[in-house]
Image (cartoon, rainbow, N blue to C red; front, top):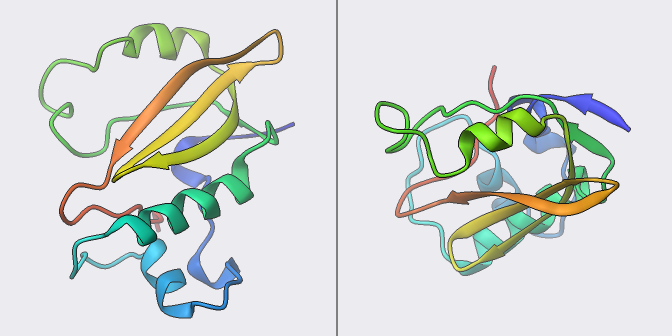
Length: 129
């Protein structure tokens, strides 16, 4: 099992292979979002992330709040418990509406935790440079 931090899990857009190159370019971008992501874009992003990191092939070794309402406020429910259990295997990435769900666990306790990421009106995942 490989080990990596959440912030470096995502590959650059050039590494993705899909017949729909426009969606591939928008799925992971380093520029500001110019359009609201809809269901197909969110589903494509979830499937792409799952194909890359799902199935327990990667371990989540660190988590950080980079943006959103929790950065300057109180931590999300269960944040301390999640951090205490690291490292966790990334079992799956899926979506429901505009929410991305990462199922996390250990071999002896599969799918014990989940991370939720909403794409909202203009949200996208980006790669850090």
